[in-house]
Length: 178
Image 1 (spheres, rainbow, N blue to C red):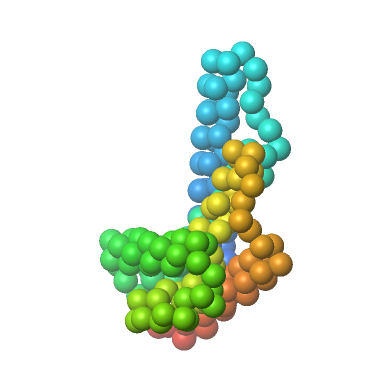
Image 2 (image 1 turned 120 degrees about the vertical axis):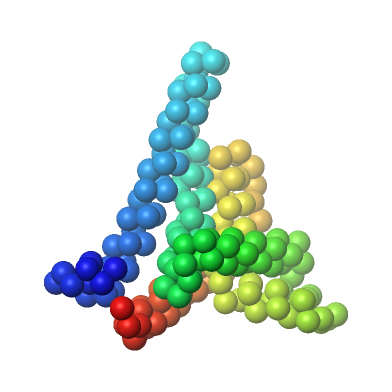
């Protein structure tokens, strides 16, 4: 990493390039898998099955990959590759569990019978992007079903919480000794 930062680029440009490069690779793999799957299913059925909903759902679902890639980058600043993978997996698991709980229950209903675990879930749900909500929305586009998604709440929350993660990474990385 020290060699990369010796080039005439800022640390912020390096991080943004690393995030966008990893996101492009993962999304490219999704697109390739989608093309292969669509072609295989279309040839088996004798009808072309690609629709606007499938492409839109895939792109919406890929937003959760962007968040996971960014979290992995943050943990990778301090941990080794394997440790970063494990911590990212555990963090993603907790984010998904807290999101799933709040999909079924209202946010303010949780505070009626508050416990330590519910409080922890509420904090995780409030700070991090709601991955499960975006996954459910993407799946609903792909399957042609209705999703429980409040765009007026989820879009600003996603943008603000993701921006908070990126700003935190930029602040930490600017102060980190290489």
